[in-house]
Image (cartoon, rainbow, N blue to C red; front, side, top):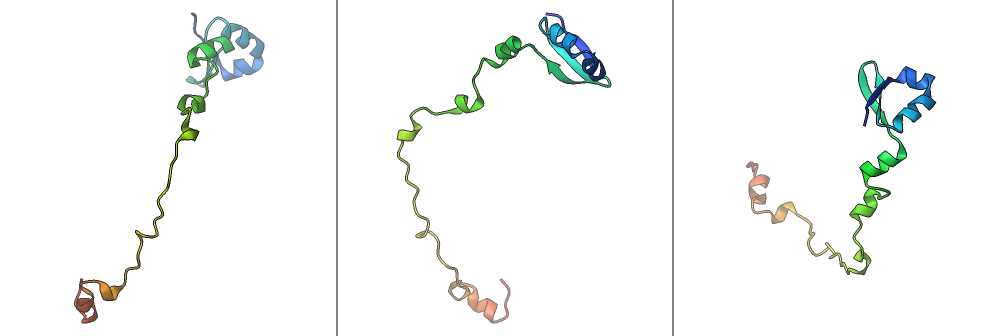
Length: 98
């Protein structure tokens, strides 16, 4: 499979030629001398990516809607902190540091 390199300026001047070239292999598009994009025919793209699967499809968990999930309430875990109930509150009130 031949690899072709094409400047972005040449791509803009003759995009139909670039598309025809991509039918035979990837076409690297450059800005200056740095490759920035790759033009592929759709068949090659689908072969590389594995078809039409999306990341959401790959991460899906079939049957997850049947799993029961109960979130515990946190109100029993939270309580107010009062300085008067802290073990060192007397030291702080007397001018002593923590």
